[in-house]
Image (cartoon, rainbow, N blue to C red; front, side, top):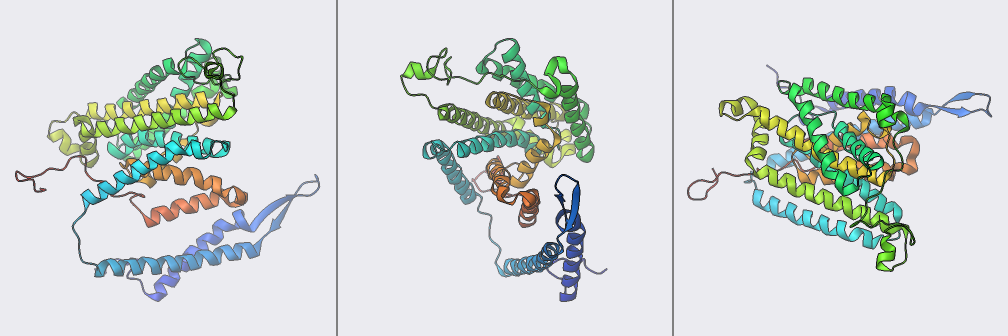
Length: 430
């Protein structure tokens, strides 16, 4: 049988044919996105204009980029073939990631001090940390337990609406509602997990997708409970030890307590440090769970569920624990989101949010804590950097995701040391 052709063994003619096929696909996709545009004719109507030179440039760039990519991949393959095999340096890699992680924590602590007058940077960093927390929660389900969840935003919504209702209807504070909202989200995680215990792969993904849509439709249509499309407004902001970040003269103003001048940035910086603390606690919790028997069982179920059953592991409890803990962490993030925004509506919890969170886990490297942080930075900052190219913003965003997956198919941090490493009686790795 003839060996299958790969990009590293293709001839020049085959490379040109492959590049032409990519250019043809780019042409088909580029006609409605780049080649055609509309303009307003003085209120009379819309007029369709053509931009064939821009389309031709786009197709030519795709053709040339494909050839360059093939050349780079071939050069890397030849370089790897000439390089002698090396033993995996797991200990050195782990130490390097630890140093990088601590450096990231230090930078996160100093960021509000360096940008104390820049509201945009602090707000953007807060958004990144929300997605980091959500990514770590979904990483328990997808990265560790190997259960594909496309409806994770439902638990995010449950946490947000739980706090919104408890605070506006019953007068609960942020700190009172936080554990309760996490518990309710975990309960919904068990509700989702129980009927999906026998499902795997695509079937599990479809069920979780349906669950997320059910939650969203309930929030949209049950107006007496959730406010419907109008959402819930005037959600109280979190305070510190009973004091709020409000102007002097207000009830329990922290500015009056400390006798300092009030500035709106004080509340934003407090919210930033609050989500930073919640994210760090989430990281410590997940890292601790991975070392426990339950966490090790998650990884075992991900690798081979049948073997786990043969060894006597209760896969039902293991899967339910993964869904519950992942949902609880998503609920905590939802509570903070509602408290930060002061207003929530079903439009904030659509499928696109689930897709972004799942992309963070996959792009970062499933099971990698630091990879989730790096992927969150990429997926949150890229759209912001593309604001100057409003027409092509999402096109650039999608192209960046494709390039990352081509460059690192296993994720940004595909390498991850095992949670426990068996050693022989003399301490040698077995």
